[in-house]
Length: 254
View: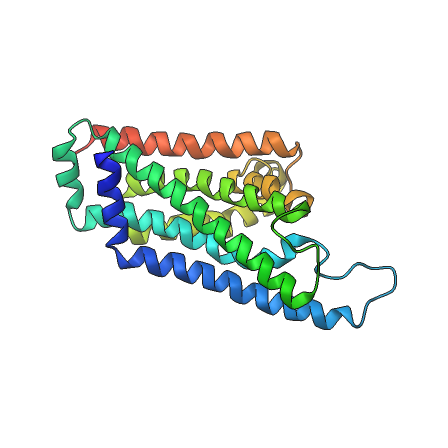
């Protein structure tokens, strides 16, 4: 409990966490407002035989998937690498020489914070988008909206394990964030372009599998198995990366 209290004090006294979480939620709300207005304007000009552009609740939370989730993960990276930058990690390891409880406490706290922030962003985005668009399907309390309300936070919480593991491996904010963003935003999307084997490799990309589990068929991409096998593969890779970060931290100097 003392370690958790210590980690909580670090988070609540660090401005970067407030900024990243706040900007993530505001961007999600802003995107939901724009999409809600777009949906409302399109409602007056429906195309025969075609559903409206916002028929899926996923459309209302594009800001969450595009901005909030990434900013939440960056907040976790900064929390870990910031301790190495300012050498506060040494004090924590002196108090707890076994080290792993410190890492476990920080990981647990940021997994929970990540899930809470994303859940808030999903709820507010659906409410704002639904209110502006008049689309009754855009609600976080039933149907597809309720499914997204629990899947997005779970997806983000699991991904937090991966980014924290990567941060403990690299111990540098700029390098970790750059590598992570290149991996998620570029490599996983471009690897399918490799001749002959690209699509087969793309099916194994962890965040592609996580996106498929979270967003359904719209995000299947090159994944060939079902949603739950995709989920467990995503979970396994993220946990493995966290374990690697833990082991490396236990074996080297602070």
